[in-house]
Each structure stands twice: as structure tokens, then as C-alpha cells.
Amino acid sequence: MTSEGWGTPPVEPISQHYIVCGGNALAHRLVLELVEHYEVPVVVLVTDRTRDHVPQIEQITGVAAVVEYPNLTEEALRAVSIDTARGLALVEGSDQDNIHAALSAQGHNPDIRIVFRMFNQRLGENIERLLRNGAALSGSATAAPAFAAAALGRPNSVEIDGRYLHIAFDDAITSDRICVVADHIDRQDLSKIRLLPEQEGDSAQFVRLAREFGDDGPVRQGGLRRAPEPEPEAGPDSEGEPERGHEPAVGPEAEPEVERAVEPDPAAEPEEPPGGIAALQALRMEPREPISWVRRLRWRVLDTMRFLTNARLRVVLLIALAAVLMAFAVLWYLNRDFGWTVYISLLDLAGAAQPDQQVDIAAGTGTGGLWQRVAQVVITICGITFAPVATAIAVEVLGSGRRGLPRNPSAGTRDHVIVVGLGNVGTRVATQLYEMGVPVVCMERDPQARGISAVRALGIPVVLGDGPFEEQLRRARLKHSRAVIALSGDDATNLEAALEARHGNPDVRVVVRLFDDDFAGHFYRTLDNAASRSVSYLAAPAFAAALMGSEVRGTLSVFRHVLLIAELTVEDGSGLIGLNRHDLEDPGGVRVIAARFARSNQLHWGFADRTRRLAPGDRIVVAATRSGLARLNTVLVEEV
Image (cartoon, rainbow, N blue to C red):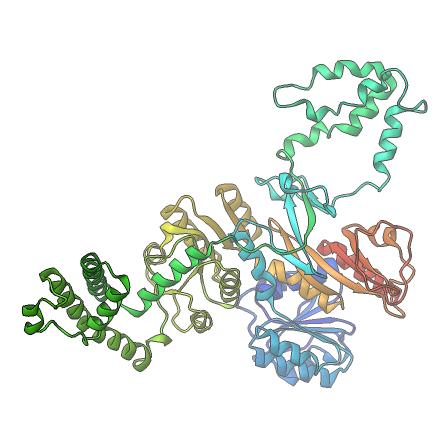
């Protein structure tokens, strides 16, 4: 049921509901999460029913009401029954507006769970201390690692107790994997991916061996011939079929069991490429991007020169520097004394050299020689050139405030990442890449964008202007870049930037921010060496879980799908008490990857005891799908 009219409260009294304030993409995804996965009543409070994603939100089955108010005031909060609500999510508006609304909501309902979006994470942490039951999250901070990692062609990671969890695909999977997180991976049809597929028990391998060899054990006739197979190691030159001729020696009754045990389902083979599996793994240390210090120094020096000087001035300086070096070489050749040559050259550059006197030349005691005098004159003249140039640079930088303006990338920019759009997400991504040591160049059409000042403070070059993407990308040195990330708020604009980038540099990696899943599917099928991510798709599960009281440590991307890493604490009265690993994983979509028990502070990775029941003070780390974590939270709420 949806409310009708401007600023009207829900048609019927409602309680124990959740309120979402906002009509943007994140609000849209969050409402879907709450309605579809948590199955809770949702009331949406918006400022304009005709803008952004509000018309789509009104069509979602399960939304109790959509209420419109021009401002997020106490009257608006009362209109959505804030006194009887269980949770409030503030996902739109400025940081100041969200802080004010959160404090007002707590005044009306002290026990309500409040989750609010904050770009300034440090300020959000301080505001959390003022709330009895609140959490500050940043959608851009949640999504930025996935975009940055996609641009570098590696999976993003989530830090848990000094280890970095990441997703590995196919050949990159090592023997120490924690669990399989996806199979049936087909790049051409992402709908076939299964997250956290049904897994076999820890004893499945032993049961398979028992079925293969039978009651008589492996020493029976034919067993010795079967033991050293295994069939997949026949090698690339072997078809694998001749070995099957030996299988009847084991007994005709065993053949069907072996086929089912060692070979995949033939019907599934056309659906997935070789491998087609993703697994969760842990690294001791998150790897930094391998960029040598020589390349970084070269990029910094050339970029600084481009910032401080224009093209003509650089030509003058380079000619003067070449002349000084040639004159220095002449002096060194004539005198064979490097120290004296450096000394006299510096005096000449400063205009303080003492020329030979005629009396010294007549007496034969001068330092003389025609070529030496010519060299000294050249150095002195070049020194006269350097002095005013250095003065001009100092006056221009310190006096005119040029340091406050964004700068274009220099001619030495190489192997960099171009970030298109300096909104909240673009600023986060550019900052994270910079901290990883990756050269970054930003593009922005709006000179008033909030991210310009943030990246300017880091010294990151910015290409400003609203001209064609082709020209802007050329100025950003697309030909020499490694990746382009399009992060504006419009899908069509991002796609245009991606296509222009691929046209200008066929080898560049393209990462695009797309909201529409169908649009993203066509994008994957059309372009190679490309990836798409959705900020709202990555952030909404974390906001929904936080609204339900779970602590989501981060999200991991499997193409367009999301895997949540959450840490749960067993408290007195919690529904987790008495549950074991089998109970937790039984609902589906949940894997217990680590546990920390109350009696020990050590985190046990891959805890194998499936019968050990949880007690107050224990903590567990789970990898879960959106629906899996929602079902787990629902069970906990019902238990409580």
C-alpha cells in the first residue's frame, strides 16, 4: 500500500517497521534488501516523489508507504511513525542533515536502531558515541575498494584480524583456500553464477573412496591399477578415453559410482568455462602495486616541472641547462680537475667569478685559454637566465596562489589510472589508488565539484572542462594509461566515457559504474578487459545488515554479485547461543570461516569442529550472501 498526496502520513497506523529516508539509488537498493531478504515492513520518506528512484520505489511490492516532505523535520519523522519504528536509515542528504535527523529520531524513540550515511568517517565515528544504538557508514568507502581493485585487475580484500580475505578465480586458487564461494561462472551469462553453492561435508572425500574401492579395500584385483590414475592428469596430448578401458577391472557395479565421483556432470560442462570457480582465500599482507621508485621519481619530477612552468619556459630552461653542461665539460677537459671545475662553474652561475687579468696573462700565470674563457662566459650568461626564471616561478607560485588551482598531467605521466568524475565515490577511489602508489589522473566537468579540492591537496592532476570526452581523455594522456574508471552518477555518461576510452586505447582496462543489471550484462558480453560495479549494490547489503544489528566488515565482489564478510558476537540472550556450525550453515548462503572463543583471544581460521556449540562471549566470522545473512539475522531475531 502506498500513501497518496503530498506530505501525508501512512494510511493505516503502523509499528515495528523500518524507515528509509531518501530516494536515490542507495535507498532503492536498500528498500529491496529489506523487503526481499529481511521481509520487514518499510516506510520510505522522500523529498520529491517524481525525482530519482522514487517512482521505482513506489512500485516495489511490500513497501508499506511512501511519504513526501520537502525537508527532514520532526514533523516528517512523526508522519512516518518514528515513535514505533524499529530502525531508521538516513541515506541521502548532507552529513549535517543526517546528524540532525539522527539526533532528533533518538529523542523521539531512544531504542530505535539508526544507520546514517556519512562521507566524513571520522565525524561519523564521533557521532556514533552520541547515539545509544547507531552506526555511521559510508557508501563510497564501502564501494571504493572494489572499483580500485577492478582497475588494477585484482580482487579487493577485507581485513580480518591481520589477514586480508580476497576472492581468487580458477587457476589463481591455491590449496589453502578457505571455501568455495561461487561456481557455474560464465562471463557471457552472469545469471548462471551460484554464490556459496551447496558444499559437501568434510568427510565426503573419504566416503567417495570407500564407495570406489568397496568393502574389500584397495588391495583387490584392479585396485592397484586404479590408484595411480587420476584421470585429469593424463596430459594435454592424451584424450583421456583409452584409460577408461581399464575401469571394468574394478567391477561393473563400481563404474557408475566412479563416474559420478570424479567427473563433472556432462550437462553442466557447456554452461561454464574451464575452471569457472571462485574461492575465498586469505593473505598475510595486502600486496602493493609493484611500481619501481625510479618510475615514481621520474613521474613526480616531470609532473612538478609541468606544474611550475609553461612550455616556452621549459624550452628556455632546457637550452640553458644544456649550454651549462657543455661549458662545464669544456672546463673539465681543459683543467682535468673536477673539484675546481665545479667551484668555478658555480661562481660563474652566480655572477661572482674573477676573470683573468692582463698582467697574469702576460706573466703566463693566468688560468687562460680561449675556450675556457668562452665556457665561463656561457655559464655566466645562463646564470643570468636562471636567476629571473627562478624568481618568476617563486612569485607565481607563492604570490599569485597558483598552487590552489588544479593542474593537468605532465608529459611524463605513464601507466596511470584515469578517474572520471570526482563525486564521493570518485574522490575515494582516486585517494585509495594514490595511497597504493599508483599514478592517478582525474577528470571532472564541474569546476565546483567537492572532490577537486581533496585530490588537489594530494597533488593529483585534474583535467577540467565540459568538452568532448575524446579531447578530455587525450589531455589525460589516455594513450599511456593502464585503466579508466568512469564514476559519474549517470549510466549513459559512464558508458560513453568507457567507449571513448576503448576507442582511443584498445588495450586500456575499463571499469564502469552502472546501476542497471541488464545494462551491465550487455556491457560484459560486449567488451573484453572490462568490469562494472554498482555503488548501491555493494553498499546496500552492508547498510541493511547494519540496520539489523550485524557488523559487516566489508564486501567482496564476484563480478556483479556481492559476498558479505560479517563478524557476529554471541551475547547473553542472543539466538546464537547453543548453535553449532551445522546450524549456522544449514539455512544456506552462510559459511563460518573463523571463530574466536571466549576462553581464548585467538582467531581460529577454518574451524573444523561442526558440533561445538557457541557460548556467550564467542565471536564468529562468516561469509554470506545477502539472502544468507538476512536469513541468519531473521533466525536470531526470532530466537530472541
